[in-house]
Length: 70
Image: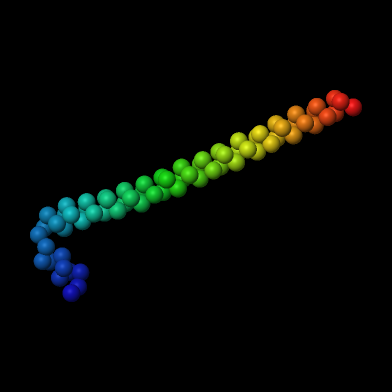
């Protein structure tokens, strides 16, 4: 059974409404997954930036306090 035969036996509302609804649901799921991945990536990068800033501040503080002791 070919695609044309499959669609030929269906009512027209299925072609115009059903297929569009299914496509919207599928693309909404894909968009939702991409949003989760982008959000997770942003949180990981934000975490890495905060840790790097903390390491920088601690090293800066440690070098300035050790040089003042001598």
